[in-house]
Amino acid sequence: MAEEVVLLDFWPSMFGVRVRIVLVEKGIEYEYREEDLRNKSSLLLQMNPVHKQIPVLIQNGKPVCESSIIVQYIDEVWHDKAPLLPSDPYQRAQARFWVDFIDKKLYNPSRRIWSTKGEELEAAKKEFIEVLKVLEEQLKDKPFFGGETFGYVDVCLIGYYCWFYAYETFGNFSIEAECPQIIAWAKRCTQKESVSKSLPDGKKVFGFVQELRKKFVVD
Image (cartoon, rainbow, N blue to C red; front, top):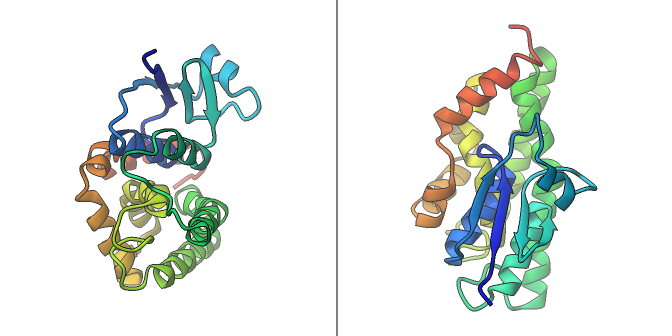
């Protein structure tokens, strides 16, 4: 029986990017369905009734939710090509720890960079850079977080890269000046076709955020 794979997603989502990258990396054919988050489809509400959020992967009618869980699921089901998680249990646990760290620590300050101003913005920038510096310390001089090969942590962090231009513009700072290793790592990642094909253009994301910001900040 042929696999039917559908992805419910929203183009600028750094979480959706994770799933798109892995689907390309694994060579999986799938149907992409763009969601309007202001008018969510009945399919999204049916397939993710708890959180009602994208991304949702639907395989043969069965949904998998939450981007980091979807990535692990794809890696387990299509394990014969481009493995993302290490085979060693300890290294696998470490990779999961760092993705959990990214999910708990990075999104909140990154969102505040474009949705606040003044002291709150300055605090958000400081927190954002501190998180990236912790990740730089983990990366050290390795090409990728897992070593020589592109893996789970890389997949789950690189989606933020297409938002960097928006963060820098609204926050009036340079991420490269603060965290050069992160930028060098991101550029290495974008040399992979699965990443370059899946990442939205940073200027396009900026335009989207510019409109979104109007709801939060009076300039």
